[in-house]
Length: 234
Image (cartoon, rainbow, N blue to C red; front, side, top):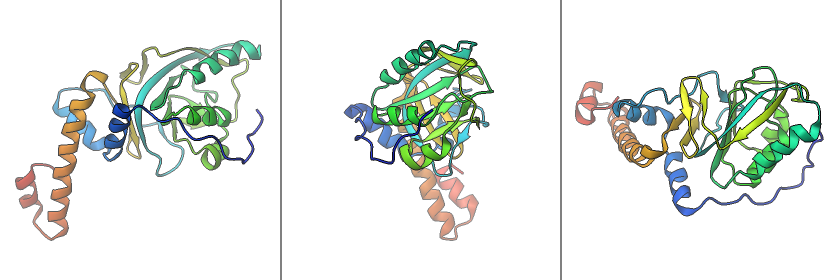
C-alpha cells in the first residue's frame, strides 16, 4: 500500500449540532462514570473486551456508532476486495465512530490511507475487534484515534474482506447497533444504546460532578468516610 505525503489534509467534516453537543459533553466524561450509570440502570454487557486498546496513550473519542462486518476470504481480486471498502468509507458521516467486527484475528483490518479518508469524512475514531497496520503513519500523519486488539503488517488480500456496514454487530458480549453511542478512553471502550444515550449522559454528568466534589474534599484533607457520606460516590 502506498504511503500518503506529508502534505496537510482537508479540514474534517463537522457533525450536526445535536450530535456535536453529545460528542462534546461525553468527551468531558470518562468510561468509568458511564459504566457506573449503566450498572445503576440495570444495563449490562456494554463494555467491550479489555483486549481492545488505544494505539497510543492519551487517545480518546466519542461519537455515533457505524458498525461494519467482515469475514475471512480467499478473494485476491483487488477490485472485489477494495470497492466495497471504498463504499464503506464513503458512507461515513460526520460524528461517526467506525466499529468493526472482522471475525478474524490474523490480519490488518484498517490502515493509514483509510484513516485519512475516515478523518476527512468526520470520523471521530475507530474501534476494531482485530488488527491495524501503518501505525507510524496513523500516529504522526492522520492522527485518527484507533483502538484495536493488535498490530500487524499483514494485508487483507486473499485473507479477508468487508461484508457489510451499518448493520448490527457483536463484539464480545456487546451488541452494537447503528446509532449507539461510543465512548473510548484509556480505561477502554463502552457502547451506550441509542435509546438511552441522553439519559445516560445526564446521569453520568451528575456522577462526575459528585466525584469532583468528593475529590476536592479528600484533597483538602477530609476523611474519606465524610466525603463518601456527603456525596455517596467513591
